[in-house]
Image 1 (tube, rainbow, N blue to C red):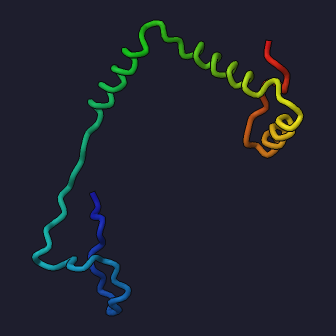
Image 2: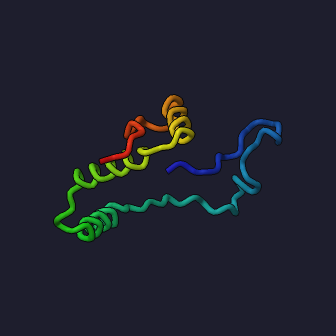
Image 3: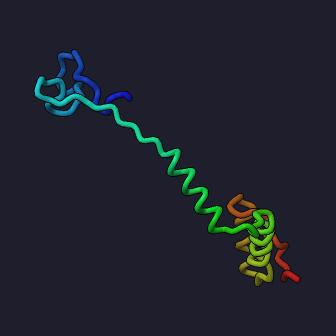
Length: 104
């Protein structure tokens, strides 16, 4: 692992030296290589999430439900809301959804 603080430069201009005060002195402690392996924690977290979702969880059904909710959100707009929605779609902020009509 590379040190976070660069060693002092040999540049005679002290203003060009960006190292912290005291860097390079003999009484400055050496940097220690530090690494954490989160692989086992990530596997445990993923297993806990899947357990909490249960065996009946259907990600495609959830996605279809979210799409239907967004279509409903942008449906039945009044004239001012529709104008604002069209402006946001034209500028690329929102995707086109629902056509501005009430969902069945």
